Image (tube, rainbow, N blue to C red; front, side, top):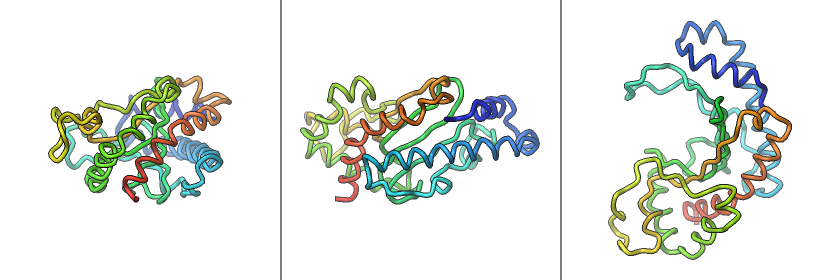
Length: 225
């Protein structure tokens, strides 16, 4: 499970987000980081039981840095107030592949997620995914409209830069139109603090990841046919 002290550290960091406080509490950060990595290793082991294509990526290399990139941000707080870790077959958080994502953040904001968030370095995946959704609409819709998937996972997230029109090169009346407008392709399931810090965290996260697997498979076949 995730230790309560890990969430407490992140909550304290949220209220003291400056370098002097962080350096004074470096030991707490190190302990929280190790706790997250230990749980990530358990998740990777469990995912391999239903998705051996994942392999065994190095959890430490899959963990995003806690330092924020301030170069183009008006928000100058130096640290993220969550831990994020992506697990994909390349074992590289910069990979263009879809993957399983672990998010630890206090206040009921921890989550399990699956899919791909398109960044500049992953832009080549965007067109391939849209073409696959449009061409293989029946297969894709069977995944996202599956009643069990809808009940336990929900729909793909639509909070980030959704296009107003179907992108050029696709029919405006395509049955996949609303998904073709997306710039990112992932699902996100929030988890309460009581679950994350309890004995059922790993088993529940794995149950949800297994339900997300068909989406992950579809996206990765689109990216690497």
